[in-house]
Length: 278
Ligand SMILES: Cc1cc2nc3c(=O)[nH]c(=O)nc-3n(C[C@H](O)[C@H](O)[C@H](O)COP(=O)(O)OP(=O)(O)OC[C@H]3O[C@@H](n4cnc5c(N)ncnc54)[C@H](O)[C@@H]3O)c2cc1C
Image (cartoon, rainbow, N blue to C red):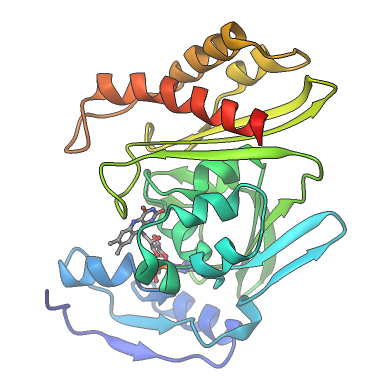
């Protein structure tokens, strides 16, 4: 319940935050605080300083330009839900509860990289790109590479996530299906589906899975089954079965590995059906 002692820094700019974080490698950026503060309260972490990002307006925006949507790292779950964004708005509406959604940020989620977080399934499906800023400049990296492993973002000392970039996906339909024990809980399984149909034929389809691996994955082989086909029940069943093959879950308080694997198939089927019928 009681965090350890730490120093607290309020930088005036992202540059200043970069410089401070580079100089103090055990300092931690503070965004929405809804993963970091709980860890401090359990004393899982003992950073020397917290570097407050919240006041840095240069990280707080949603912009649509040139077929891309740029989401500033400090954009909250609540703002994403209200933003009418493909897939992400639906995924955001399932994150935690209203209080957490008011504070938590997309930059915080992907820097923390809980393997059961909701956005990563969608970010994988959408080929999202992460813009990262450090003292020596900015770089962009596909989310699939940025997410190296659970709780392991590809961030060098002093770097912070500046922006998440996703394509607009005009004419696509989508679905994020989350299986949870109760409202407000992390996913047992989360499946994101994004697809485009033309005269009943699937012209593009992307399927992302969360909570069933160390990090979110894309079920490419399941996508191939649906591509350029008019989907019927048998085909959807086949694709969902293939998606299940991508799940390598662990048994925990949310269920056995076997149950989670089976539910990957069930949730994939539901997500495909919802996307097709939207
Ligand atoms: C009760 C509860 C239930 C929850 N349920 C869910 C859920 O169902 N699904 C879900 O996805 N999440 C859930 N969460 C997590 C929530 O979404 C957090 O808000 C999120 O994981 C972290 O975002 P944050 O802005 O709060 O980050 P913080 O807690 O401030 O930071 C988390 C980590 O990221 C780093 N960081 C933050 N921003 C940046 C940045 N821009 N650049 C570099 N590093 C940065 C911090 O240093 C820290 O290491 C839950 C949290 C709580 C408390």
